[in-house]
Amino acid sequence: MSGTPGPRNGRVRVLIVDDEPALTELLSVAVTEAGWRPYPAADGHSALRLARGCAPHAVVLDGMLPDLDGLQVLRRLRYESPKLPVLMLTARDALERRIEGLAMGADDYVTKPFSLEEVVLRLRGLLRRAGTAGARADDSVRVLGDLVLTEETREVHRDGTPIGLTAKEFDLLALLLNHPRQVLSKAQILEHVWSSTFDGGGNLVEVYISNLRRKIDKGRAPMIRTVRGLGYAIRSAEDGR
Image 1: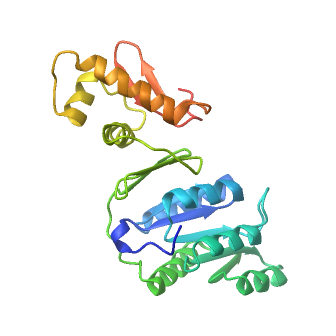
Image 2: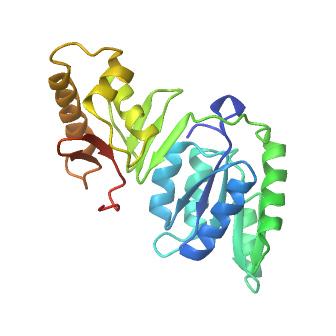
C-alpha cells in the first residue's frame, strides 16, 4: 500500500476486520448494499496480507482481535498507508481504548452494539473526506480466498505474496476468477484467452494450467481444479466441493 487509492482504481473497497463471523457477515452485507465491495478478514495477520493485495479505500477494524491487537494492526496500516481511512469498532466501556485508537491515527469509531446504518454513514463521511466516495463501479480487483488479482496493474498476490505471471497466464487466471467455481472447457478457455481453436490447443491449455498450478498452488492448498472430461475450475482452498 502506498497511499490511499483514488477513484481511478475502481469500485470502493472496504476491508472489514473482525473475528465474529455473524457480525462480519452483517457488515459485509451493509457495505455491499451501500454499493461498495467488502473484503472480510478474521484476524490481524490476514487483514494486513489482504490489505497489501486489494489496496482498500477504507477499513472497519475491531479493536480486539485473536492474534494481533487491533491497535497493532492500526499502527501497521498507518505505516504502510498514512492516509487510509480507518473506522474502529470498540466496546462501549472501552473509553481508554478509543482514546488510544484516535491518538494512533484512527479517523473515527463506533461503539458496540451499533447500527449498520451508523457504520455506513460514518464510512461514507470518511470516504468523502478522502475523495474516494464517488469511485466508479468496476471489477478491477478480484479476490477468491487468499488470492488477489488486480487487472489495472496486472498484479497477483496469494496470501500477501506477489506472484509473477506471463501475459497469457495472467489472462487465463483472470478468466477463471471471472467465473469462480464454474467449470470451463478447454474450448472455452482457448476462445477467450487465445481467440483460437487451432489443433493442439487442448495441449496448450494443459501446459498453461500446469504453469499456473506451479505458481499459484505449489506449497499451498490447491485452488485450480481439474474436472475430468469437462475442464477446469478455480475454487477457494476452503471449498472442498
